[in-house]
Image (cartoon, rainbow, N blue to C red; front, top):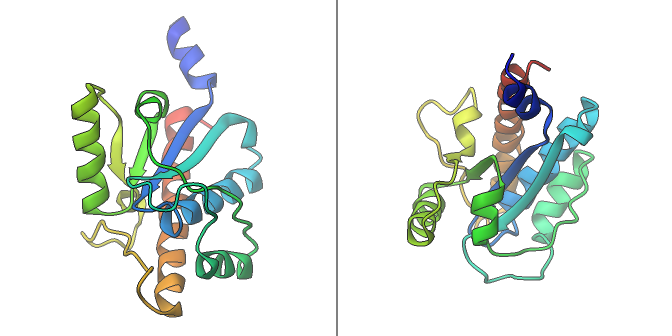
Length: 170
């Protein structure tokens, strides 16, 4: 193995989860993924964050319904809502969008600022996606929508971690 490959394999993997307002789906994905890497003993190998394509809720906490769904599964959400920055596009190894609008906005923003960012859909890692790559926004729906999003995010984050572990040989 070449020296630069060895260095790349031991450097932390940086993952950014992105939705619209950074109060429902992306903080949930951040919390779920943190739990998965903690349970796997890999916390020192990752940098994880979440952000939104809008600044509607900057400085706020996650939606109370998202916090409650996560809490029932033993996940604590303590992120603070913020908007995606140019620095994020340059810094993160993986930027994972929740829906088509988010990915289009991220790609538009990256092109506007001249950054070739590694942007994908989170649900690409969901074994049950069956071609539907969007994590639905539960904000205007009822409690079942938040439960469904939790299930999708858990499967997707599990698949993401599996792929990273395979790539890194962990």
